[in-house]
Amino acid sequence: MLLNRQSSEHQQEDILRKILDELCETRKLQEKSFAQILEELESNTTILGKVESNTTLLQQIAEDLAPEPELPTGITFQENTMLPTVGGNTLIYTGTLSPVGSAFTTETFSVTSNDPAVLPTVDSTGLIVTVPLPAGWVESTTVPLAIQYSTSAPASLAATITPSSPPATTPTGITFVQSQ
Image (cartoon, rainbow, N blue to C red; front, side):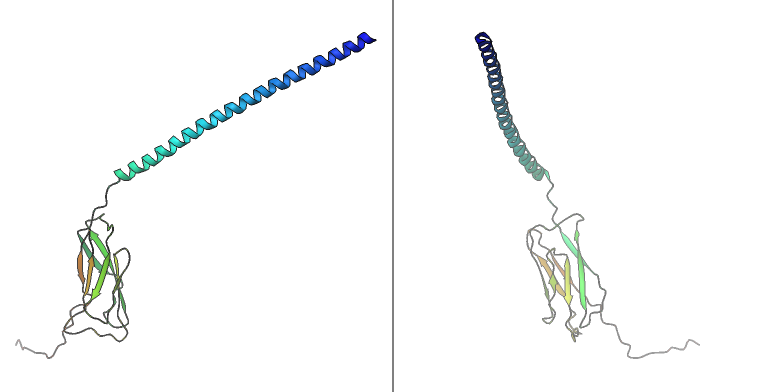
């Protein structure tokens, strides 16, 4: 019986040794896998850094290759509202730049009126001029309303907007000629 007991203990010892060897092998594989994962992570981080750097360079190249906007050499204004030049109305003008495709860059815009009662404004694009005529305002018969428009450099432009049409001539008499 002693022999059976020793044999059984020896078998158990062999089984335990095999389990321990397998555990050691598994641990080695885990350590190796973990090391490989760390190595791949470091490699991917390096690649990601290069991709980000290349993306930044490509964006800079695209900006450098983009054409500079052509500066305008002229501007014309068209009235949108087509209202009469009488007090209480608001006249709105839209500017068109020339040449076609040109654009303002860093200019500032200003508008002034030759009549201190009329205070025109220009929007931030420099293309829309609004002329509010105060209630009760009457245009001078000797000096028609004129709005002076100007821009700063780099595209220094100037224009005059004259909203009023020439005053209508009122007939003062009539002459008849008999033909026969």
